[in-house]
Image 1 (cartoon, rainbow, N blue to C red):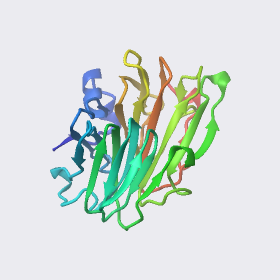
Image 2: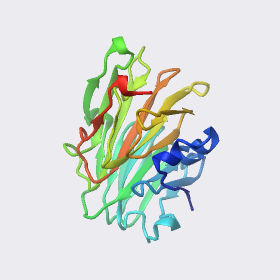
Image 3: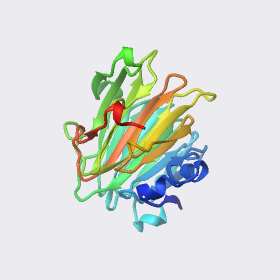
Image 4: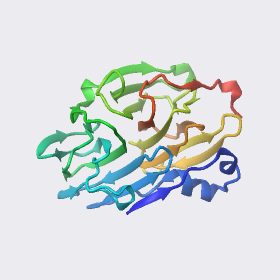
Length: 272
């Protein structure tokens, strides 16, 4: 069974108290030893999952909310190894994975399992055609340096599944690492009406936090996020934050446009 999050109108969003805001948008308990856990957002039907085989093997089955025999009957999925190591097996073919590798699993895959000692994060979206399952190692991802040290926003962005990389139907996915001395991610920020985005923060020490900002640009709200917690960002919302210590995050989008630069920039002077 999946923890289901309903879509929210921006006017309702602004009236939510801090606790209800977290209940709608922060996914706090996605990872547990020996378990597969799901969270389904009604925003673009994005399905998140955390898998910790804990030395054993987990069968990646479909939650009842998507009414499918197999997870990829009508969907595609990106699987990230956050730390540790393991093997993802798709339709009998094994894919060994180490930290920050990402495996794209195409629509039509009938069996999927994860074994090993690693921690794995999955993002699953609708798909309409079959594309090949493809493993991208961290060092092979399309890597760019963005942001400025003077603005405390220098970061390394790795694109794995995108319109110029591994082909997909709706899923785009990558990992951003903040460089030493920088705290701001996705700065300057943006919105994109054509797709929903999710962030999964990781690599953050247990006692540190990220202050994640969201909402319409002129009416922002904040949420405090810990290590290995995810945030769901509706298409009308900004999504950016600052950390109290070095961190990384997995970004993933699902929707009608795969272009990485399909976004509507928001100037810092427009934020309030």
